[in-house]
Amino acid sequence: MEKLINGTAAAGTVRFMAAITTEIAREAVRRHQTSPTVSAALGRVLTGTLLLGASLKEFDRLTVKIECDGAVKGITAEADMHGRVRGYVKNPHPELPPKENGKFDVSGVIGDGTFYVIRESGYEIGLHREPYVGSVPLVSGEIAEDFAYYLAKSEQIPSAVLLGVLLQNQEPFVAASGGVIIQMMPGANEHIITMIEDTIRHAPHITTVIKDGATAEDLVKLALGEIDFEILEERAVEFKCNCSFDRAVSLISSLGRAEVAAMLREDKGATMTCGFCNEIYTLDERDLQKMLDAEKVEDKVNAT
Image (cartoon, rainbow, N blue to C red):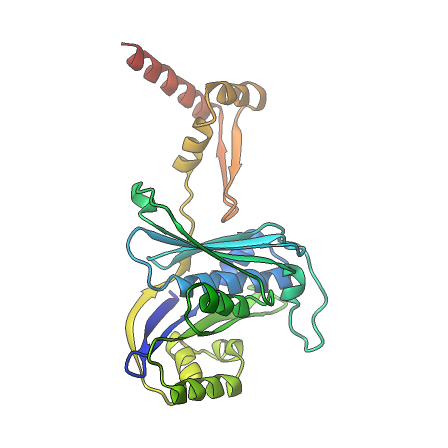
């Protein structure tokens, strides 16, 4: 299974997060049937969200949301402290010609808009604390630059963000995916900062080394060069949704007796599709009848 690592360098004045996410991007593309350019955009957002959530604690959740006027209309990704990430795009199918340099025109399908980061704590156990919401305008639509701009402007952390998705013309369509974030903490030496900037400027493209078998540690070395670093934590990562048949039943049941009865009478069942992972849940006549019977029993109990 792929993994995410985080740690420090330069006597704790530099922090890093890195992950290989090829299987995650493949699963997202398979589930949402995205066009090549949208696949690149979604893969970058999923990777960036995982990296940004590297410091999440138990019961925390981080959501990155891009609302935009480009053809994709919007991208949302959500990560938790267990290394699980899920995400979707509002319009999975638009495609644009590549740029002059041959790269995907991700900024073209994104357009202008706003980059949001939502941090929640305790959501899994019903602690409804007010979430932290930060937002900045999109500065490029290329995703990595937008993550870096958010960190600099909203969280006051100067950061270098490298995100990449390499596609191929046959299944599995994603050949490589991953990313690394390097953050300058208070007290960071100007010489160290210059060294890192120069190293990144001359480094090979991130997807090239991932395709050749690079690990998350290799991505950190690619960004830090000769600077020694210490890995403080690592965790397995995967594309994983928290939807389930029981949740689908609960959601449909919450529509009320009249609506459920109408589904039973008119459609002989119900179908629900999860927006995050495209999983389809089908409820037959027996499932709907059980809901109605359970409500009748509850009404009798409440009446006594």
